[in-house]
Length: 330
Ligand code: TYM
Image 1 (tube, helix red, strand yellow):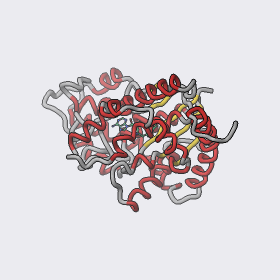
Image 2: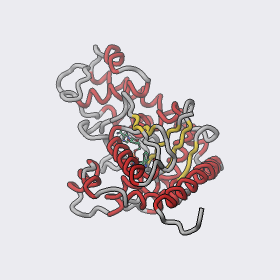
Image 3: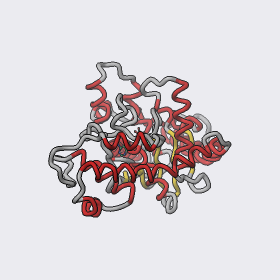
Image 4: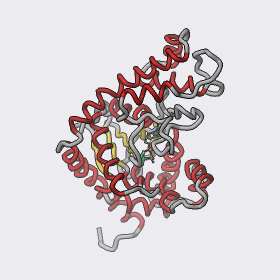
């Protein structure tokens, strides 16, 4: 059975972008793959987080993984810090990564351009920790949204370099990007990605938003003056984003969605989109409410930790031996 691994960094409440670009797909993939999904809590602190708030984001994220349909009997679901080997391998991989490579990361460049020098070293080096998260488990595929593709490509480069310097150690994983839903845009600024860290939440749909809030946000989504339902991200980014959301929620092609709504006025189209999002999220929210205070969350993480750490310990030992970090005779 081929293996897949992915993670989400709950540095805020999870969004419709996280669901359509990542979580929804993990649930499908767990039927066919040996799926590893973790909560990237170390990645959250690359930018300061209020500790009480962070704790609640993490708990909500575990509950949402399960509420969306990840099954702890099928998938290995774990918390990154429950397997401290990630941080150790992260350091080793940072010693096999060049500054120039990190300087080229788009996410870093964008952040550096907008945050006037207040960026942490951890934010800068986080792609090497991400490489460790992945390479630790030798997955064949890493399903991610479009924005993480560059980091998976860097992971491949680091793995190849390590394999050449020492000897074959890591499997070279492939990023797996969805055809639709890989880049859900902000409703209010549809040329920007929908992001949990947006300062204004007008353009962001959170998985736990109440139906009336979802409808309000979709109704006020930015559109254009073309008065036509076309998929044309260049000239009609707002409408194209809504089309993409429907296609990803309902597993339909873009063409099919356009054909259904081509004669709709924008107001009626937005109402239909809101209903589709609400219908998608309502069962998830109901399940979330059932489990958020149950033992299931802790049980899931304990089970996941056991399986993940068993693999991680062996991998780290192998890596350290190859590099020459161990003194004991083996
Ligand atoms: P994060 O938490 O920013 O996003 C988690 C997943 O959701 C996808 N995503 C989106 N997809 C479509 N449209 C959007 N607007 C959107 N916003 C986010 C992301 O592409 C991602 O798949 N560094 C990672 C977490 C991570 C990781 C890993 C992922 C840490 N280690 C190892 C995979 C493998 C991150 O910050 O994702």
